[in-house]
Image 1 (tube, rainbow, N blue to C red):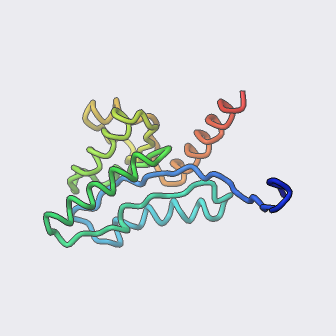
Image 2 (cartoon, rainbow, N blue to C red):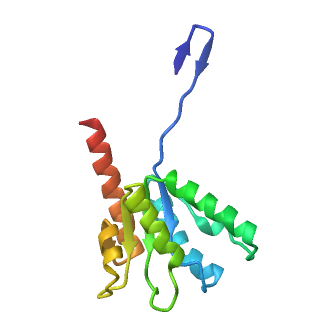
Image 3 (cartoon, rainbow, N blue to C red):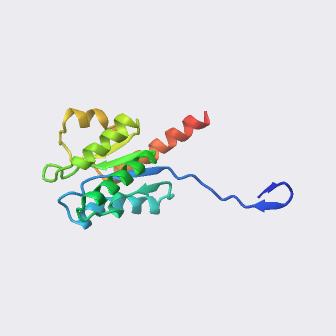
Length: 161
């Protein structure tokens, strides 16, 4: 408890949870496919310490109207700007166009200088832009969560020293 001017007591129970934007295919995939890996990552966090707040763009699905698409774009950009980290799922991109994901990775990494953790299938090679923009490559959602935990610890250590 802290006292402010002897008149009020406030119980402060606040813990900052770093925000993680979840980039990945949403074009030409079902809602279930788009949400599956995202839900898996959030479930891992829930089982652990619940360290992160996830910004999931699948909460905003559009029906194709031009103005609606622009609003969603602006909201996704705001989410990325508010993020501390980005996890991008690049699995299955050989069959699914990842235009939005590529733009999200570029904006997060090159413009905002955020760490981008990308999930890819083993032995998959990507365009040199992807290779340059992604800070950590992993092979699974579980590995992506482990890297998030490592980044969080590194950031905490850097702030405390």
